[in-house]
Amino acid sequence: MSILNTNIKPAPRQFLPEDFVITDWDTLKPYFENLLNRALNSLSDLKLWLRDSSELEAIISEDANWRQIRMTCDTENTELAESFQYFMMEIQPNIQPYSDKLNTKLIENPFTKELPEDEFFTFLRNIKKNIELFREENIPLQAQLAVEAQNFGMIMGKMTVTVNDKEYTLQQAAKFLKDADRNLREAVYRKISDRRLQDKETLDELFSSLVQKRHQVALLAGFENYRDYRFAELGRFDYTKEDCSQFHQAVKQHVMPLVDEIHEKKKQTLSLGSLRPWDVDAEKEGETPLKPFEKGAELLTKTIACFNRLNPFFGTCLQTMNQMQRLDLDSRKGKTPGGYNCPLAETGVPFIFMNAAGTQDDVTTMVHEGGHAIHSFLTHSLPLTGFKEYPTEIAEVASMSMELFSMDDWDVFYNNAEEHDRARKQQLERVITIFPWIAAIDKFQHWIYENPHHSAKERKQEWRKIMDEFTPASLDTEGLDEYRNYGWQKQLHLYEVPLYYIEYGIAQLGAIGMWQQYKKDKKQALENYMHALSLGGTRTLPQLFEAAGLSFDFSPDYIKELIMFVKGEMHN
Image (cartoon, rainbow, N blue to C red; front, side, top):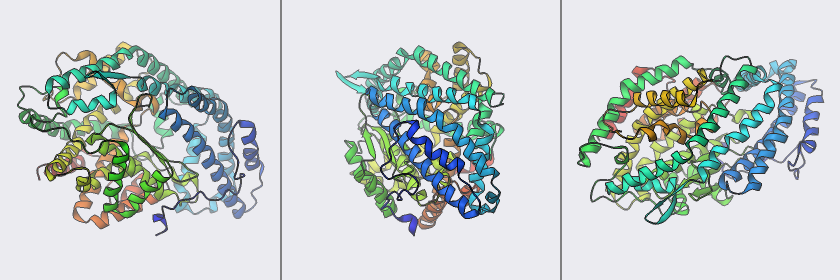
């Protein structure tokens, strides 16, 4: 199949010169003028225009993404930050009015109606949505938001703690939370939490500023609040805020009891009178924390071996990325926290960023981002850049399914079956225990943007109310109020990608469904997976789920069915 070609090379440029590099708006502007003024007197004229527009879009997207990638890899380099800020403040604001005019030109052209509906329906639906949302007066606000949101990474990237006389990033220090020494776990938990609290006011002020600017964007676009605006911007055509509330309730009803069971079992395993937050990931006495790799290079080598077993195409994707230096895996001071896969639209080979510290959680992150990367490879052959802009919910199915598909092959990371079994059980517990956090973060964001003029004090109170709602009774949090009051501040999405979080819940359900298929018929499940991902954004979200052999359903009964399946697998 052509989609399984990982020997990706950028298509030769046919509109812009091969040696063209974006430096400023003046050199970029003529290409927008060309597209805007070009006569489109036939369907073939329109198709050529679409191809040229797509090429320009891919070049701009890749340039912007590289600026952000380099900045997140080294937050202490002011030149990299300035390069990103220059693009967002001086180039992007000039692009937006032209993009709106080009979108209007496309929708109003009579030959647009002759484009194949099965291929162009979602593409044109997104174009119409962008036209409806565009307001020229929002351009400076959106530029400010893009730059200001990156301050979160700058603040977090500087955070370190000292453990046993050695400095660690917060990501590196988290490995001590798995140690069998309970006193060490508690000490490290408090050090990490105290370090975050040092910047609580700075992070509060940053978030308040972002919320106010986002609310203004929504008002200028004709919406009552930013939540409703953001639902439209994210293209959430297929579910509503009421569906999100239904998801929150289903988590409380069908997931929380199983989280309680997991915690009670952990308490018994550790022989504890009460389970504290620093005990949740701990190993029992006599067991050393899982150590699947030492450095990022070893993590990559072992993940490639794991992916090769699933499908050689998957392993080759990562090998190609390594050859093209599209990976930055190890944690270090000065890196933004977290992990991501960043598609690069022109060259087609994405970039994986993460903060590996040698833990099993890092293995999960690596295969998760690897799933995103495979999605990028599978969509590269689609003819238009806009076709590759797939819904975020299916993007997370790509990554979360890979976590579950790959579990049986994690023996490449471990020397014995007992360690492999422990890693698998930890992953299944994670599948369940992540749901309450997803529900809490999503419910919190709905409140934030429905009540944009709240005070920092009111925000703290609402978060505690929601957090208490989604904290299982089996977890003893007595005396930890200050840490819990500001727990939301560690979640990058709140600052950088607002209202992007319910996707993880929807996708986790999809991933469990994919894993059910995998348990029955590995070959068919992987075929369904790759087929759905290769469609990119050319189908609606329910159609993409259907192509993967999944139900687009997050009703309480369906959630219960999937959770019971995972529970059964946990006891096997």
